[in-house]
Length: 175
Image 1 (cartoon, helix red, strand yellow):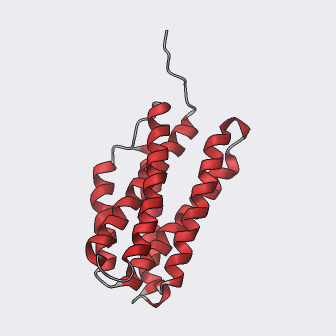
Image 2: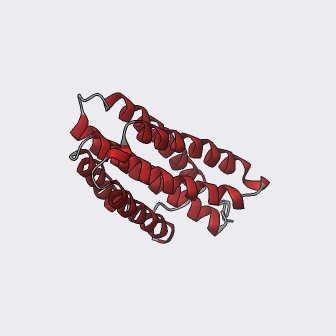
């Protein structure tokens, strides 16, 4: 007899991609902190990173409890996330905040779409997604307040980061 509770594939994909996304967010903030440590933005970045750790730990627990396999792309997301965070931070606080705004705007839409299709049978997951979506929007708003839109080539930068974030979501659901 198999004791595994079968998680429907769409729910597995949600948990897998959210786990990967929160892991990637931690790596982005780690990269930003590697460059901006000791700067005025460090406490804000640490605050956002701490929330991302809670998000990751929550999805990590769900992943294990439901026996959902993580994406095979975790090593790539470690490197890509850190590089994105450090790379944007090298251009200054405003560019780092533009990265945050871009990523969090994609995550907001991603979490809204997940929330909309979840029913009462997945109340815990649905409530978790909505709570985390609100915190991600807090990060987005912090980025704007910290001058993200004054970053060099803001529109180009955020367009590229949004496209990369959407591609990472698509890949992490499947691989």
